[in-house]
Image 1 (cartoon, helix red, strand yellow):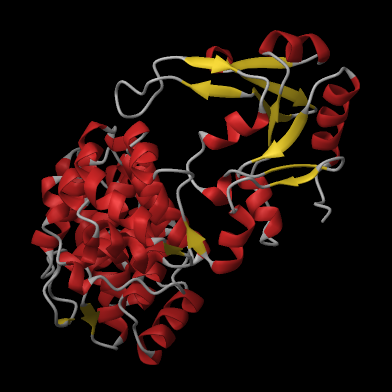
Image 2 (cartoon, rainbow, N blue to C red):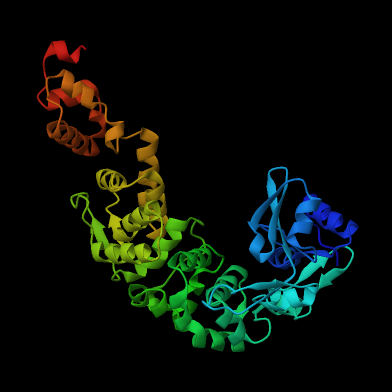
Length: 416
């Protein structure tokens, strides 16, 4: 079987070979190529030591040279080239205390996590598959290389990676590997929250986001965060058709903290909704997982509006749309599965160019200052009052109309 590799990868492997070293594409790129997927990255493993790799290529970066990794730059793209190695003792449940370079490809492959990630390839040798990775790919199985308890004891993050690969590939976790996950689950407490968040995010962005349930089923959830563990997993419903956007998928997952049922929004609720408690829970979980502030804010909005449905009338829909950015409204439309009537109202409001936020208001702060209003809170209050008016009467979003309606009626001013 011949795998199509980027020309740059072939170039690196060929140069290493020409100088007497073994070299192979390895890991996820081989797996994805065999599955007919486009690999995100192409990693290379070699018998050459880091210094020998650096000597062969003009531009290199010492990415992780203490662990044998050098990044070879070709154009603007970097390719990680790592020396065959044997990992020493994992003293913290995440990282080896030391690594030992080896001349054996097999020794390097046997330290890897799953069989489907423990294959290597070169045009000259073909596929090197000592642990049944191709068979597991064909069977759709996630299986550890060797003893799963040993692999997971070395690095507890691997138990979340098992779930993530299950979700990304639609594979089942092999029984022995699953059992080992349930045993090692407490070791997740030793893994950084950021790394856990990254794996959970990749799971939610996959083709099978619903498999995040496996985090609960294997007993991992209490060691992710105490609040995370309280989520009612029976309510987890994440349609794979949702956009592959981080804040959308996280909101779809965390809305399971909401009570079931629909709240009707008639345009008179202001910013208040029926799911403020669920939103607070979502924020707490995401903060514990060290999520970025922008994602947290967007998830908070979407979760607070989960199950809230506007009356399918222009003013109610305008007022709901005004509570959030346009892309958040579109995401909410999908999350709450709004029907044709609300979608039609949304399209008409946008086509008509109705004012939905202060930045679209015909009157600006400068207009009020010119009218004699002192800078300060009063200007904000007047603009908010005008916005409230045009949400009900979009046809009035004209400078003179709004100023007259608010008591600014001098002909001289309206002609400025």
